[in-house]
Length: 343
Image (cartoon, rainbow, N blue to C red):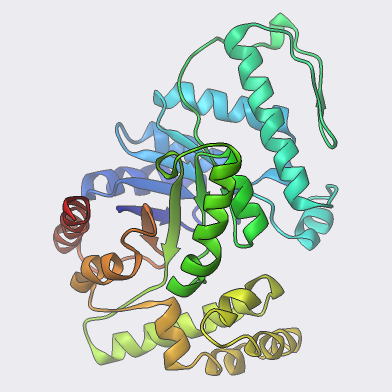
């Protein structure tokens, strides 16, 4: 299990220095998120500031773009980095796609399948020089003049998609190089929903599990003092409650017996009762979703819960430790990984 750094909420201006620091510290990869700026711009800055670290988007909003514009971005970032770039795509939700990005919405799994297939057709045309002639249910790309064809390269462009439900997870197993999971998950949900759906997708395409990497930002609740620990628990309760108010996470809650909590959280969110929402995330539910302990305990605790389930993880929150101490902790993740391989 590799340990990455999530550049959550960062602007492109700070991603370069943050990624360079992450590489020096010993993180295996960094992930740019799309909230206040473009994830591809952040990735470019991170790639230019590093030499060996994997850099990916987690996620870039697919439906805010089209396959052609996205193909150009992935192609160029792969060339810039020598193949270190990973394209992570997600659907976002209907309200944001329609009202924030003013783009069409509908049948997200089918649309994502078409988007991925179109990407593959475009990249294949650039690699082989064959005529581009893609016509799908949502996207159509049938024009590619030499003047608009980028310089050929054979560098890999791994594509991952964000998935919570089983149908999107199956799609990732069938077509993608990886899945980006949400931090609001449980070991039970992974075992009962995510991993079986992944296997169904792999089987549909006659692919092996080793072909797909599973990445998840984990709610690591850390502290050296009781005061720090309680403050992080409070913050995490409210963040989990915010996400869990969305109907997509009802099945996650159901995996540990909290299904009926979701409608209650949804009603409170509509009323803006954020503090009350956090109060409903009790210690048992918190413990199912978050990993709680001192920073030095995280490698062992994460390996115990996610070893054999996930391939890459990060901490949802920044690490609350100095650089020398962090480097020792990151080596602990590497050591746990070696023990997992040995087993």
